Length: 95
Length: 483
Image (cartoon, rainbow over the protein chains, first blue to last red):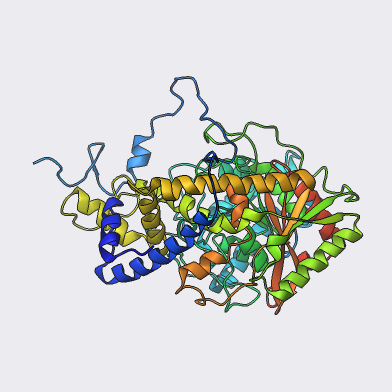
């Protein structure tokens, strides 16, 4: 399995991940190598095997629907890149 | 006193040989002296001394826990209220955590003194501590070598006597491999045994926190404080925590040890194989029965892991978007540019590789071939472990195919780096507990013996490790220059 630089750019876009243009070739080579490693799985027949998502085979626990957390807005916003009047600021989204 | 065990220090604090403040000052001085190792990202001297003063009061009032007044340090993946929690990344270089991880909360409550935050591979992705934004950590046994990873700072700090004990996390071997490379004791508990709340997530179905110490006895003391059900972690297991120190001395006569033949194949350094054989013979002398077992699907563990872990990583790391906390790029043109550039500028190469692979494996058209296939392989590997552990009490083998390698030796080839986790990764896929304990040296570098147990059999593992340490002195060796 070999990925092209086009593939890398497409995946990077899906992940909203900036990749330097001069590194794209290296990523294409490295990722192709990793996919070759991963493809070794095809040597093992998994017909009829149920997928395993979690070691304990647990279901998500439910809890009563009541407020348990206190409001820590100020504490959380103190570490935000940019806030104003209690709101997180981002570049304009709607014209 | 820097090379004493937690158990010895606890006795010293009680007999009045030294106070926690004196002990803490001593460790802080030593951290400064050996700062070239780069084991710490942040030293919290002021807070440590305040904690030590409080601990001395508890000791005087005889309300102390075993860990009260003992200097420890946290891997920088555990959120600590009011202290920088970087996870080894530029992304979180400016992140002052607004809350404590449950593990931090529990160790604080036990009265442990936190000396600071330890260096690690960026977001715990790496096997050599070389992907850290804060630079590599040196191995105290040979400063031209890596300490292992991702909990490299933890392992180096314990080995060099820069803390009495440390926390680590293990997603594919990140406690056991650095413990082996630095000649210390490391325990990765059963998945769900230690809360993951406030432990920055890499691969949520594999990540597990655990203790890194000089001895199994110390690991029992630390695990006692760290383990237990936590309603803040939806995968925490609600099971009582046994007394881990109580069973340490149980005799090993009749212990059944399985040696997976797949652990001893080609690729394993011959001298390491000999060290493991000698260790197993020691167990025979202690009354254990040894038999070979086979786990035919083990060879598919690395391929399955490098789908599952990156897939989970790509989802987990999507939260780092430059909006609410962490790094934000300068002058973003629009929201897409804000996301893309903040992530692109703040994540290192290895983290990017794993996000890209994970995104690809989960993308439309590839999900079944990669992710679903890997989950099925994961079950077959787990079934292998279950049938082996139905026949024997513990499995033993090497932790790593080599001893600590040179700094920079494998950074150019990610695949070579991945393959060095061949003996540790399968355990995480199955969710089993496992330890690394010092068992000898090759080329003057420590070799770790891996002991794998059944689900929630941490007490048995600690017992098996402790009895070995009662009869050998590999765990008492100290690197030259750090006596």
